[in-house]
Amino acid sequence: MNSWKCAECGYQHDAMEPHETCPSCGKDCEFVDVTNYVPKMDRTDRTCMCKVCGTEVRVVNDGGGFLKCCDQIMVLK
Ligand SMILES: [Zn+2]
Ligand SMILES: [Zn+2]
Image (tube, rainbow, N blue to C red; front, side, top):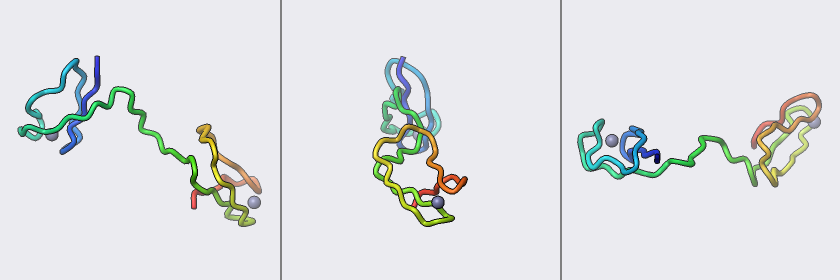
């Protein structure tokens, strides 16, 4: 089973093949395969900054956790 998402309106459905016509738009929309799509923010290569001391850390490998400094969660710059 694959997951398909309408590129126009975001309508999503599970099927082996995408609909020809989007039930939501009623048009021949383009459907994107989002089967393995995980809506998660990729922080790799972004810089995190401590609001307290100003230390900046580059995220080289997004492990999904939060960086902490001065007992505060560092914010993305
Ligand atoms: Zn649509
Ligand atoms: Zn700090």
